Image 1 (cartoon, rainbow, N blue to C red):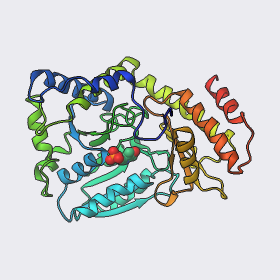
Image 2 (image 1 turned 135 degrees about the vertical axis):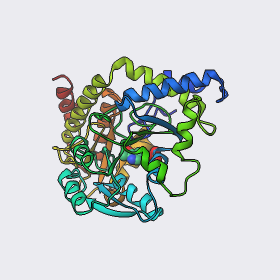
Image 3 (image 1 turned 90 degrees about the vertical axis):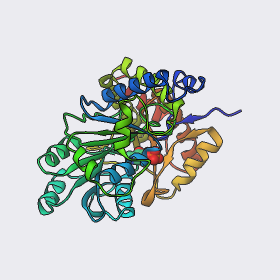
Length: 380
Ligand SMILES: *Cc1c(COP(=O)(O)O)cnc(C)c1O
């Protein structure tokens, strides 16, 4: 018998009420019963994305599918774009662009720091032909949040379209699609939205739509024009993940009941608790504290320890899943998520497990110190 604790920045645990909905009898997707769920979820997502007028498309794919859909629906081969990256997921925009022959002007920040909006402003001035600017809301590989409000202001004064990957940040870290002038925002079901993996979302504004009509990159399954046509019939062009959409309706109910502002405040508190707990283990935080995000926390692994072993031992011996480093940070950091259904006591499980594992590996720490530090923040 093994009890599992899931504290990874995707997928995240899901509430039992949401899981239960997934087991209901399958509805046919061309029925009014399903249509009602579909429209309810679209309206709920408008609340979550904080938009009044934008189109919301629901795609059966992981988050990366929504990212790819943005590129094929907005661009032509040889178009020039800016990718402003501060980690693995920022770089993913560049990789997809390269796949389709879109030319990337790259802005790269040091990992652990956020994208500098002024650099985007400068690059846009130097390259007025740029069609889109791609960046990330919360960079999950490092635990950093970008200043989307400033970036939105800058890009909105140009002809370029701003495209945001908010896959891990949506519903945990403030994001105002309309107010911040974010033209396209993509997300996924398995993080802050407390659902199983398998759905992705795109939120598309009026400034982006003319590009969608003119784009010439190849697209079929991901064609937003077909998705838009189907919505008027309360349908998707092809068979949707019916059970996931039905379960998402439940998680949106839960989200609405608590209220986005309360969720943001609760998640911010969890971030503070997590930072205190990890510091209490004598670990140094990885992300710059001035731009550390609220949905996960990253910490440096001590020099003489292999971070991959920490993750492996926690999972195999104690059933606790946290994340290690990605890309050039492999083995060098650990990442603990506190988004969605993850709560304060899940974090205490992680701290206790980490205490045991780190001390076994020879890291100097005081038992109970992490808990004490985290408790004092939790109760402040
Ligand atoms: C999880 C994540 C993705 C990738 O999502 P998949 O669902 O694995 O395709 C992309 N960007 C960010 C910021 C993420 O956190």
